[in-house]
Image (cartoon, rainbow, N blue to C red; front, side, top):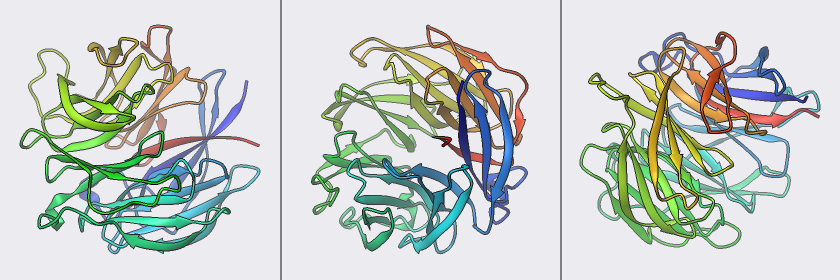
Length: 351
């Protein structure tokens, strides 16, 4: 048995149209990976909608993208007991920072600003602090506040940084060197179907496939790729349950570390779609649609052991825990635990 810290990013009261009961900051829970139980410990406050979180790859540092005007990135040192100690806050070089990610080298962080349509690359020192920031060169003649970049992620090898533009129905890739420095304009530009709104990105460990959810058309797209760098859309699959005809907005997707099961959160149908993958990662089928036990599942995360899936239901204000069986199926573990407007969930081992 191990106790793990779970950090939950939330939307605060500044954007009531995005949430039900507003959060107050970053909530911290203790997670028991033997029983799957969650227990609320405390909340780090003093931020505006720290709704997307990322961990430093080597250091006990948590980064939070603040969905604020102007946008901000706030970093916290994780103390030995798991509590958060504010380290610094820096501008995101735009409005409404919606995503943050860290390059595999841990020498750069990247931010996507949903409100202004801008992207930023931040230089990180060995101790995890920011020493410089620059706007990333973007789409010539097309960049606007309506482009709405929603996710920014480096490939696992670090050779590229991918951006999902929900407002442009487009995915782009920027070339990155070993330290994560980006050069020039995008080297890849993948057009998605009109009104699909690509939202979040996930990678297959083989490097041959990238998975993207369309927020407005409720589809999972399978992109062929070379070392994580996408080349074209190969296939797509509906994420809603059979017979469902209501409004639906896919949110987050997570691939199990086995590489055999992909989970997609669906707001509207309020379920988690379970996709089974063949060993290559290219052949996918939806095998089940597990009710999220709440409303508006915005966040989906897998614990470090790979035995549990935690779903953040933003509209009903709770976290639901599911045990993952040997085939990737989900079984609820107790009733949901209260959490105000959960939007992002990360796990960090307790020390």
